[in-house]
Image 1 (tube, one colour):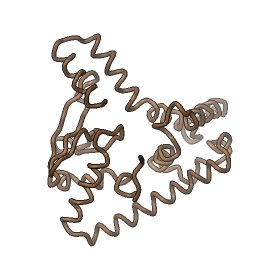
Image 2 (image 1 turned 60 degrees about the horizontal axis):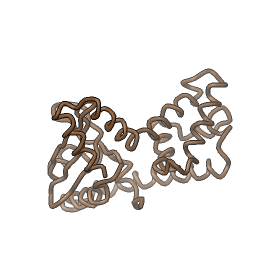
Image 3 (image 1 turned 180 degrees about the horizontal axis):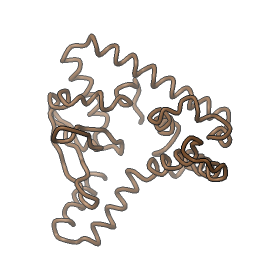
Length: 220
């Protein structure tokens, strides 16, 4: 589905059908980004360190809880919320009563704590293992990840062309030693980037994506 959307988007852009392109791109963004982006905004609003308004924090926490438990949004769940908490270094803060502790149940907090501890433990173990792995094992780890990620609505980070920064992308396809990524070019057009396994190693693909390589099981 994603591949088809990208093809149609680029076709529309090349034909100058701006209105149709904008409409379809909004659909793509909704599929790929909306839930996580909205959840991240709500997490920031619910954070006492970023928002002094108790009422606003409470409303934001409630809305975040609704997204977490919305069966119509299966793309965002406990794993995704745990990742946001880790990324923002909120391990020891999120469960307080003036943060998410006011809306999450003890069971939900326990689930999140287990996911956070598990990811940190797996990431530490992976980094230790990588110190002693040889180049072939490194390549195989990346290949396995790309095989699992291709065609999925899961963002990865790849190094930008040039001296600095990274881009968020999706793995469109992988075969042999080459991977094709979908990368936003502008607000209304998406492009492709083809990288070899050796190029990904050189660009520290694993270091850019510790959450992917730190875990030992893949979501169905």
